[in-house]
Length: 221
Image (cartoon, rainbow, N blue to C red; front, side):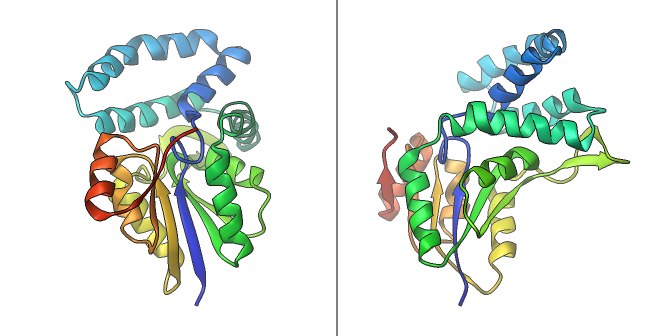
């Protein structure tokens, strides 16, 4: 039976945040004004989400969908260039070494590593390549491309919560998910699929679930 291990990306495999990396890239490559306008219209919502006045995941999903509009017109090469920059300067630079090491050990035992994330697919794939493993796949949110250029839209549902778990389930088929790593309550459906659920620096919701179910908790560095 084929074995797999799955991990969320943001907050789990890295303390980095893709949205922050995208913003830094745009500001460094001539798009500072466009990014400032985006922030001006979305920052109030971020404050409300942080205060618990609006649902945090709903706001994150809207942010992810709206930020894709900043990439409208980018060629495939330009998208990949951005993704590599974000992976290198934000995501990999803030990686959680302990989690990376555990995934590497699972890979050494014969498992395929799945990086399951709501982040844009090119960024997830760029981070996956940084792991330098033979069997690693990104399972995330695809950007819509038409005639080789980004439309500013997402090509499928955002890969969080039950959607993330379903996509991982499709990847493993009749194989075994020996371990799964996540950091928020939205990752619980993914962790429940695995034999060894691991809550990494968990938020309050996931910590409560992990304690109730006896899941392993790996505190952040």
